[in-house]
Length: 176
Image (cartoon, rainbow, N blue to C red):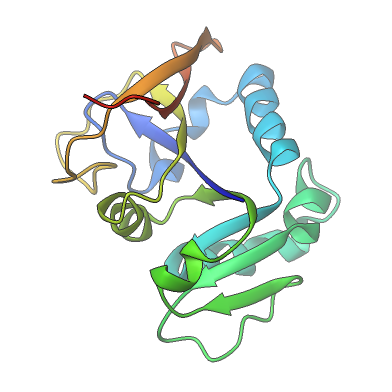
């Protein structure tokens, strides 16, 4: 069975683009714990090519950093039509969302807004883990874009400090 969980840093106005430019000053131990929990629940990462490129350039050198062993050790599926190889440890290429639908396990999606919108369009997202930051940017890539209506159940809401809210949603069992 496959479960796709989208994990995003998101502003109050729904922007997910370039979180390194607006979220890092809020980082704290509670946010780190939220991120650790989701990695422990995942069987693999599902990444778009741009996010993969950024992660593959940074994480292999951070093996001794918090989360380094986990990020480098976990299975990574890269959805791409442009890469021929994925050289970061435990990475493999997936060419289409049809192939993604055939994967097994709990797949955690970081970043990758284009991939996420494709997953939403195909109704493949089962859950969201959102860290909502007290920031309004007014422009940038948004998490949901023009996505079709999706009904969700809030399964957890917690204050993780620094004005950031951690929200967990899952697909509503009996959608209206």
